[in-house]
Length: 488
Image (cartoon, rainbow, N blue to C red; front, side, top):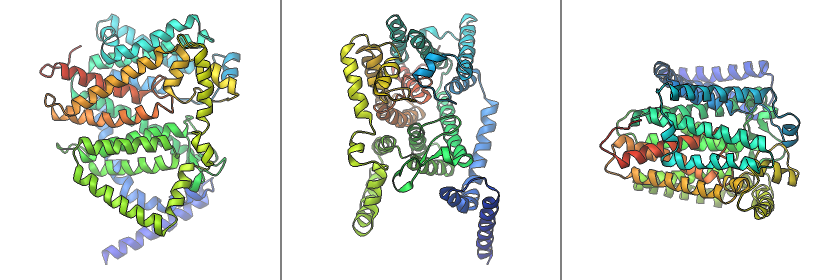
C-alpha cells in the first residue's frame, strides 16, 4: 500500500511539475516539454544521489585547492569563446574586448609562472624541454620561428606564445605533482571542467532553445542538434567531451578494486554523457567512444562480460533490424539530415582538405606560418567564414609549419600510446598507477581519433590532450624509475 501511495504521489508531482513549468517557462519546445515530464523522476532517482556526491567532492576539492588548479582554471577560462570572428574581423580589429580578456588571463598565468620560477618555488624550465612535453614544445617553437614568414605574423606570434604558455603551465604542474593520487586529482579537475562545459550547453538549450538546439535543417530523426550558446561551443567539441566522460565513467565502474568510486554516480554520469553524445550527433565522437569501449574490455580482460554484451547487442539488433524500422532510423541518424554523397564527403571536409593539400604542395617545408595557414589561406580561399581551422590537426599543422608539424605530432602521440600501453600491463607499477594508465588510455583514444577531424591538440587550451600528455609523462617516468618517488 505504501508503494502504491508513493507511485501516486510521484505521478501527481509529475503532472503538477509539467503544468507549472509549462505555464511559467518562456520556451515552447517538444523536446524540452518531454524533459519536463521526466523531471520529477530524474530528480528523485538521479539528482539527489548526484547532489550528495557533488557536495562531498566539492568540500574535498575546496579544502585541497592549490595554485596549479587555479592557474589551470584561468587557462581554461581564457580559451572560452563568447563571440565568433572571421579573418576579416581580425584584420579590422585585432584586439576587441574579449581578446583583451583572453590576453589578460594569459598574462596572469605567465606572470605567476615566472614568479614561481624566479623565486625557486617551481623550477619548470627543465620539465618543459624534457620527455614528451619537451617533444611537444618543439611545435610552438617552430611556430615562433615561422613568424618571420607567416602570412599574418602578429597572429602567429600570439598563438605560438600562448600555446607555449600552456605547455609551460603543464610542465610546472608535472614538476609539482609527485604521486599517482595527485595525478588523479589533476585529471579529475580537467574532467570537472569539461563536464561544466557540457552542462553549460544544456543550460543554454533550456534558456535559448532556438540557438542551443539547432534546427536549421532536418538533423535526422532527432530534428535538432545540441550546441553551446554561452560560451559558444560547437556540437563536435561537446560530443568529444561527452565521449571522454563516458569512457572515464565506464572505466571507473568496471575497474575499481579498492572500492573508492561511487558507482551509482558514475552510472548516472555514463548515461548522461551517452545521451548528450547522441543529441550532439557527432559521428566521429561516437566512433571514438566505441573504439575506447572495445579497448577497455580488452585491457581489463573482461572477455566474458564483453562477449555477453556483444551477443546480447547482436541478438537485439537482429530483431530490431528485421522486425522494425530501427535500421532505417539508425541510418537516418548517421546521415544526420545529409544525403549519402554529402556524408561520404565528411560534411564538406574532403573538399576543404583537397584545397588545403593544393596549398600544402606550394610550401611543403615551411608552410604559411603557425596557426595562420588554415585560417588565413585555406578558409578565405574557399569562402568559408566563421571557422577557425580546417577541421584536422595533422592537415592544419602541415599547412602552418610544413612537414615538421605532423612529424612532431606523430612522435608525441606515438610516445603517449607507448607509455600508456606499456604501463597498463607493467608489474613494476602499483595498481592505482595501472588504473590511471587505463583511464587515460580511454581519453587518449578519443582525442587521437578525433584529431583527424578536429583541431583538438594544438589549439589553446586543449586541456583534454594536455591532461593525457601530463599523465603519460608521469607514467613514463615511473616506468623509468619505479622504485623512486617523483621529484622536481
